[in-house]
Amino acid sequence: MNKTNSLNEIAASLAGYDLQALRVELAQDFIHQLLPQPTDRETLPLRAALGRVLAADIVSPVQVPAHDNSAMDGYALRASDLNTQGETRLRVVGTSLAGAGAASPVGVGECQRIMTGALMPAGLDTVVPHEFTRMEDGWVLIPPGLLRAGDNRRLAGEDLALGSVALAAGRRLTPSDLGLLASLGLGQMQVWRRTRVAIMSTGDELRAVGTEAQAQPLPEGCLYDSNRHTLWAMLERLGMIEVIDLGLVPDQPEALRLAFERGAREADAIISSGGVSVGEADYTKRVMAELGEVLFWKIAMRPGRPMAIGKIRSGEREALLFGLPGNPVAVMVTFYAFVREALLRLSGARPEPLPMLRAASVKPLRKKAGRTEYQRGVLSRKSDGGWQVEITGNQGSGILSSMSQANGLVVLGHEQGDVASGEEVDVLPFEGLI
Ligand code: AMP
Ligand code: MG
Image (cartoon, rainbow, N blue to C red):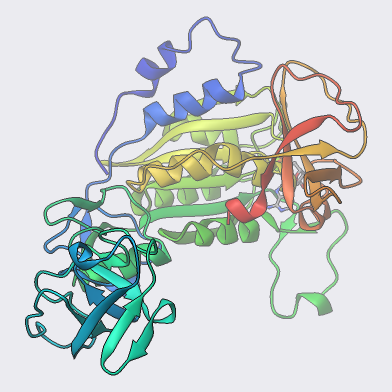
């Protein structure tokens, strides 16, 4: 990963803003400035490239379709032979089948039986679908007023012109893209290598879940580490991340240092959870600050107020750091609000804004102006076809079941105050994220 501007240079651009209550949009902008460009490419076969990011424009080496061809089963004809006043009678000569070579020539006043995808015979420009015609002794009869020149004919290159950019660099390859690349005859392509992301959970109270965990009661005051699993899952869903699991790290300076240094050596980015809260009695923040350039923010959002952002170094190597809060819902919300798009960009992708739905809030919502709130909601269709959303019960940032019950996040912007019942709000459907 190549080096970028120093954190302090970029941080200077935030001077004058309230870093104890940083707006979500400002924090997002700042993070974008921190992101280096990807540098390593690899060539993959078509199917292995699904979800990966194109590292170069795909310029069409052919035209698609390669030749003019028929869009229907019917008869290929010359539009100039069509009788505008009465029925047209054309003599049928030969058949043009899909996959066959050039058809035999067709004279004036003649037509040719043609199948979908078959080459248009030279000189013919229009196809009449079979179901609109009648046959009489080797002649086809076509009613007047049915056709215009060029109807039911696909032109060579109408899908993709020779030399045009079929897919631009930065594209995350979708199912249709795989088909499109195949239609160009391309069986392999250049993509950016996977972005390596190291994840860790910090906190002495955490225990790892194991296959026999159900049988082992937790010691008093302890809880199972859930964050590493939600983080792993959200990263997997991005499609171009290689996850390095640094495990559970206790609140001990040496253990934290080793884990962060390993992350800096092996990964492009480190995501930790826990230990960044105000007044946190642990060593996480101190170790982060020692090993790199790190800013500790309080973001004007709920959940997810505290966050550490910066870079961690080990020798010549450095990795971006996203120090997320420990509460499980805050981890997911801050990941979607900041980390997801940053990792897509770091992976060479040009992310589109996430699609939001406007939905009527079933109940009134309490919302303080001056922070962005992400409430867990269940989207459903109203009888009139529009969307409505109902907040799941307890919105506490430790209530992970509120995420599992929800199918979207109600995003209430910085300026927004209380919401009346029936008022429309923005909802980020989880389907768009995963
Ligand atoms: P912290 O940000 O470290 O103060 O943690 C805030 C809350 O989140 C505490 O109740 C922690 O026990 C909890 N927490 C921290 N890390 C995890 C984790 N990995 N899995 C589940 N809960 C966590
Ligand atoms: Mg903690």
